[in-house]
Length: 84
Image (cartoon, rainbow, N blue to C red; front, side, top):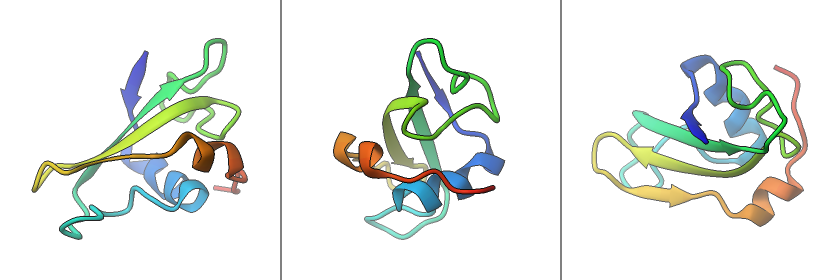
């Protein structure tokens, strides 16, 4: 299953993965970050585990221009969890 991150989760996501603060094409901050969780983790609920141990995939979608950016799986696997 997938879900869109809540606004309060986007900062931690950006710190871990380097994307999700704004659209990489037009620079607009109005983006949706959609994640796919690993089964058996808490990533499916707001405030759940969005670290590399909790998710398997993510995309950043611009609400202004419609551009989509896939977060490479390699970036997810290499990310280090951050304190929120």
